[in-house]
Amino acid sequence: MLTAITRGVSPAMASCELSFVERVPIDLSKALKQHRAYEQVLEKFGAKVIPLPAEPALPDSMFVEDPAMVLDELALIFPLGAESRRGEAASLAKVLSGFRALKYVQPPGTAEGGDILRVGRNLFVGLSKRTNEEGIRQLRSIVGEYRYTVTAVPVSGCLHLKSAVTFLGRNTLLANRKWFDASSMPGFEWVDVSPEEKHAANALAFGDTVILPASFPLTRAQVETRGFKVFPLDISELQKAESGLTCSSLLFDAKT
Ligand code: GLY
Image 1: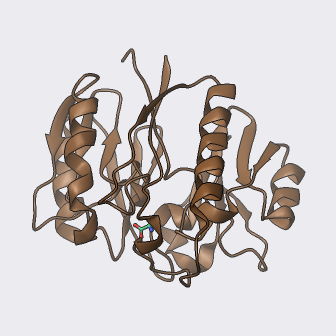
Image 2: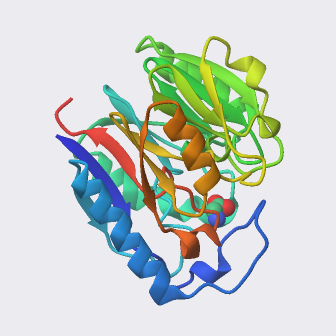
Image 3: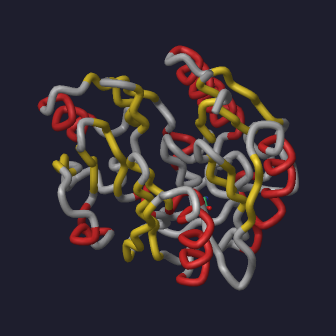
């Protein structure tokens, strides 16, 4: 069954890490409502949501995509590139151990799930401020045993690779190609974000429907032109903490 692990918004979210968004005040009650609405959308698209309690001492901990990655055969736990976030991994590993065998990337390697874009058995991994070459080397060594390929993709101008590119299905990527080396990802069809909406590339696809932040109407039109349905979701308060749509859940099939 499609399963989504989420974690409540930390009351300390205002002190989150920021890399490519300016710090502005965050209305916590609005953020909580938007996060709940996000969980409801996951349920609407068929996921069983497992909500973990908020972590008051870990401002970025609702971004559960970053400390781990779940593949069909195993789950990987990462030493996050942001030191302030390293404490997020242990509780997530405990939950994931009920679903998958765990393997660990070890320091001095760093990796964050937001840098890993999976397309079938191909993992495109952002070489970014948060994921280093040693992290990618260890990741490649671990998943190579399970016949996944790993391609490093240099990222500049944003936080994670998936801040700049996500997979919509039908061999199509939604991207801001100014923020990463798109030549590392040949053979795809591209939908480019609108130039006025640089942050619009992080979308979450369920079948032919693409969940896209409501704040990106121009990019929405471009995605729709390519034959996808778009379900807009207001995450304006969460975006102040650099949220996209993939980072707030870990999605996987609980049976495999
Ligand atoms: N605020 C998300 C991150 O920087 O990790």
